Length: 214
Ligand SMILES: Cc1cc2nc3c(=O)[nH]c(=O)nc-3n(C[C@H](O)[C@H](O)[C@H](O)COP(=O)(O)O)c2cc1C
Image (cartoon, rainbow, N blue to C red):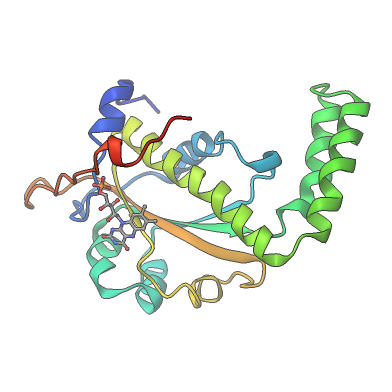
């Protein structure tokens, strides 16, 4: 798939939440997979990659979203090309050993480095309270979410992040185990409807209010 926009300044500064999508724009599943492959180059704590994506691009899927999203998000659900749900995987550490073994097998790390990493991190995760696993997975997934919004712009698409939904229902409605998966946010993706009003350009607080140097 060709890269539509390779101008990082434009990708960054011209990203604005789009809520009125052109319903005629469809995104091929192969291109969505390509965008997600770029998305998961995001960093994560200990490289745990505690994220999970569900791509909703069918009428059946959109109907499920209507069951737990707030009404003000229905236009994005109905008119975007897809809504990508991002969940944190609180049990990502269970496949962590397999990941290090694959890095060892492809000669990216020595046996000693693999064992040192597993011996350091696995006991921490195995003993961690659920709140810590939830918090970690939400941080990892948020980085992926931001990366996805920028990758979408690289592909010429607009996005709207959404967390306006009943988070207690999200996992179960989408067929996931709510103990393992925590909803982080959803990203509606598509193209701004040129016939609709322009989207709002939001203002940021001045940097001087936000930054200290020490
Ligand atoms: C975690 C998160 C949740 C959000 N939830 C919603 C939402 O449910 N509905 C919506 O219309 N916009 C939602 N937004 C979009 C924000 O309102 C928007 O990012 C913010 O106003 C800044 O505008 P900008 O994205 O155009 O820069 C959400 C954004 C984030 C990061």
